Image 1: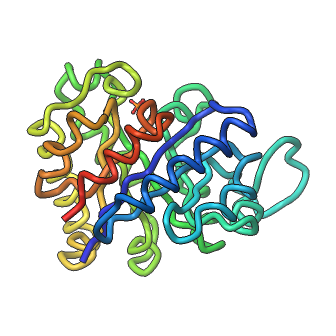
Image 2 (image 1 turned 90 degrees about the vertical axis):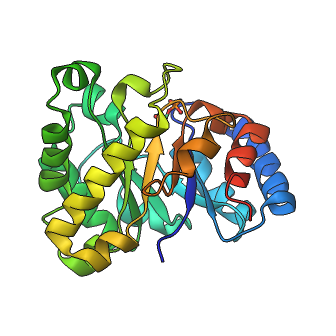
Image 3 (image 1 turned 30 degrees about the vertical axis):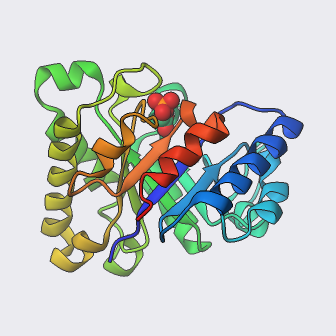
Length: 253
Ligand code: PGA
């Protein structure tokens, strides 16, 4: 059975004190109000992670937003997968469109990052998504397929089975423009069909595919009700404890 996951991505927001306070609020609300086996995750700035992992327990898991592709060494300013794991993180976002766009992260680089994250026991939240131009040109299925093939399809089956995919249309991130439930479901079904083709029915059925892009407490229920949508990657709304918790509660039985 695939897991239902709601993961927050705080991006470069909150100083240390704000992060601790926001996270504590989220943990308290989720602990009191979550009913079900959905998993709540917060992907916070690096400097918060050590402290947050001690506060969240099993209620809210912790993730990083990026990692370096090398094991260790002379890479000034970078953070390794091993370091992230060592402070109690379970997840790491790989290939967010902002990393692809502003830091020129290629599919080949992201494939390396995914491998090293897995080697250190982290669960990659691997992001794919098309730009507005690509959607309007109508070639977005090809784009998404390429991102999967070059980013994660080099993994063997056992490794791929640990990966979570996040579909985030770039045109919907932080814009208030959400993909409609039909648009999102269409792409999620396409992604799952590509997983069937590469890894077979069983692995494809067990892979969680999250939707991201202006997901909020109002639209989450309709999105998450779609057959191939297993949760969300939440940016802006994860910076408000009530909103994030309400999105988590969408999966309450
Ligand atoms: P958003 O961001 O929810 O603010 O659109 C989503 C993301 O970038 O992961």
